[in-house]
Length: 202
Length: 84
Image (cartoon, rainbow over the protein chains, first blue to last red):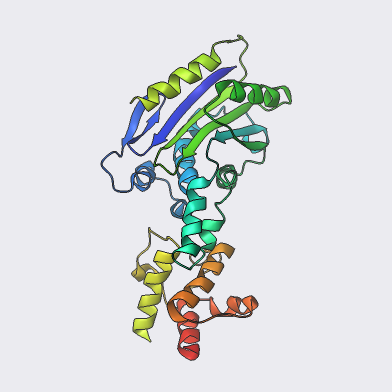
């Protein structure tokens, strides 16, 4: 297994393969700024929750690294995870009916974390398997195990993400593309752990 | 009526998070739903129902009415004027 490419999105900036591509640290709305710097036209972005916005931006940057020979429509697998599920949006929705007395349908639709993968699949017309796990912390072993299961079943490439929006303001999305490699690489988990630490320390 | 339409356009942009649009981009008679219009979806239709209730005190008892009411800013404004 090997990493084809990786991206990282957080309020202070957006990174691709270790290099900062958008500096949004001074922006009032950093993800809106990153989206506008991407230069893509997808108005639905503005309606998305923060998890989907981060994943959208990071995924757009990874598109050029998807193998051209792969049937992406069917053979791309998505494996996402975080520790707080959709708690950030859940609280916004609770506020909308408890404090504002105005329950918001557009917030309600994002009160499930796996809506993130749905948004990406709709955007790119991906019909392969996808799953979203909720676990205590970033667990690279879990990603590699599930990716391997997908690869064994015939999927050719896997888009993985740790996408987190906590109620304390911590927001990050670490995306990486995994694929099979002729050369067995036992250090993939260590490499992923190192990468996310590096991004967090940027 | 024209003030109502302008207010409606601003409220639509705010309520539906259409951040890349301005009121001037929304024509009075342009379809709001479907590929030819603003490309709004079923969740946006629910937001319209909330908007009418919270901003104008109008409750739509029969959601199937929405198809006619939400056709355009013109039809929305006409419905509000009639029912307020």
